[in-house]
Length: 177
Image (tube, rainbow, N blue to C red; front, side):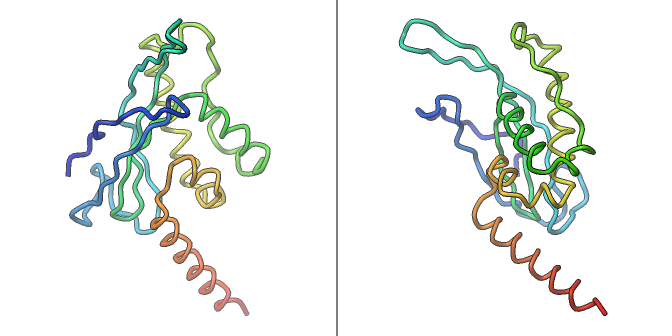
């Protein structure tokens, strides 16, 4: 299957939310050339887009969205996120999981002006990709609702992942003396 994001339509409220295309891989070989890891969440950066919205027909606002492909087993979906969404998630996770977040790469600093410069966008894309990968590699974060909501994990994948977690927990408890 084609790994490029499908065309998206901007939703009315909030103005920048995006409906994400979802696809199911036709084979179980790999996603994006990476070896298949059953039950693990994986992500790949898929570039960025500069978008524009108009308010009250009086002024326009330009902003950047960062594209990511997320995979769980053979299931794949695409998400688009603004830097501000990463920043909000980071604040919540640092408050809720400080011991885990201490080992996660920091987000690049905010820039009120010049945030559409190609160099800044490229640097942020790399940093946001590393940040998202670091979160998904840590079970405490990958399994929390805030991250699952952030990556827009489909309900069927959430149910499958929760069932796999219950089985792993039961196996661990069975091995305890």
